[in-house]
Image 1 (cartoon, rainbow, N blue to C red):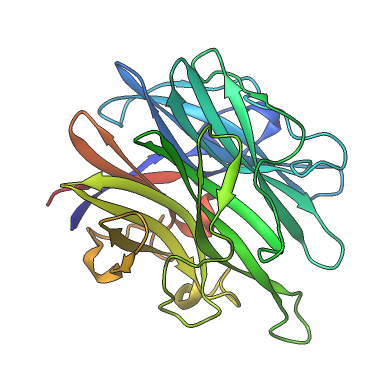
Image 2 (image 1 turned 90 degrees about the vertical axis):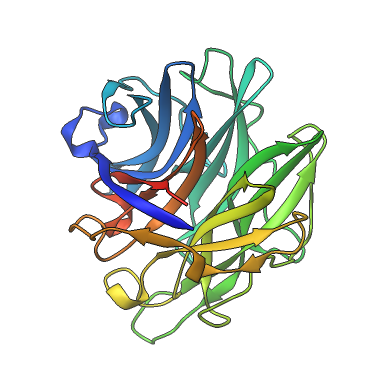
Length: 318
């Protein structure tokens, strides 16, 4: 696969975002319309204690994916109620059309005491073409379970035939790598199926993508597309310790393929993002989202500092 970088296409610091958010446009996810593309992302505000709260916003672009025609100025979905799984943030939100409804699969964040956070996956519906979303309930539809004890999130959903497929991440645990640092999380990519998109059956604790950095590799944000009869997954992966500022241990984009949606062959070397790293993505490439628009296949992704200054685009050439 040969991908051509098209550069950064959106910088959140140039716009007045809802919820007093001023930075970050993480995990861009596309929803296609007849004459434009809506790209949802997670941005951040700070609470009274100086801690971040992740909110959902969107930008509308013409199908050249260059010209911005609208940026959301109202809240898309509120954060969860006191004590709920998404009280302290939503990041990311995967969107898909099903009939006349837009489904929004949220990853809700809530703070913990012994570790920094836990996550679970929720569901919200939009009846106004994705302008606003309403939860199906205050609890999650996919969460920690017997053999997936923490950090269930990053759901990506695609309907194939009459079955809903979800690729998501699950935590294998937390690990303290040094005495003077807080514990870091480790998570892998898993798979679940559903008949209605609401009630899900996991392949409990089955890691479907092999590790390339060893057992402590963390994998995130799976995104799946079918190209020339074969399914391709794009995701990001990193070392689980000293990854935030160490360029050599930070996120990079990975790739795997499958003929049957069950067995996945990891093939990172087949993912070539050609073009110069021009500052914004020179140290990190993360949170990929692959989609097709007018017969072309695109890859949205974030760059340095986990998308603090926006997201960019690549196009599949061969």
